[in-house]
Length: 94
Image (cartoon, rainbow, N blue to C red; front, side, top):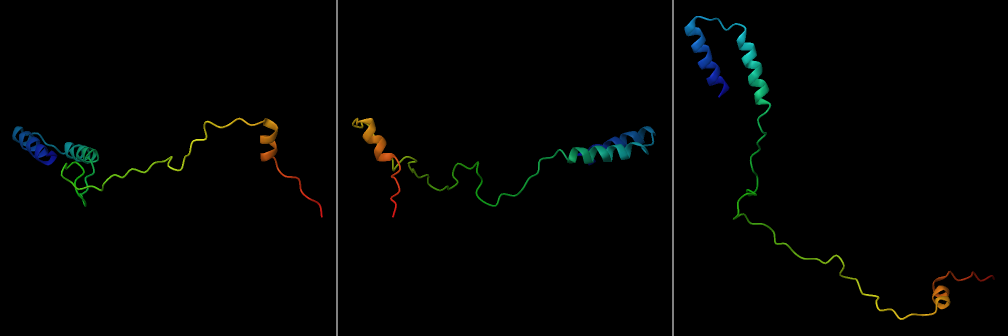
């Protein structure tokens, strides 16, 4: 597109008798700068993700809290017995 635009500009300018000796480097630099703004495209190797008919893997459900068991309601127990059941046992001497 830029090449065609540059050719038309050159033809129009040469028809008027102007010399474009200093404008060609500017036009080439502008073309390189604008070429850097083009999006990078890559060919699709798989199915197009935008295609609604594309086949996809099925979605499965797996619970994250499956082994959970409720501990409520817990029966109250005296605090000293609960504390003794979880405290470290004293080491026995030989």
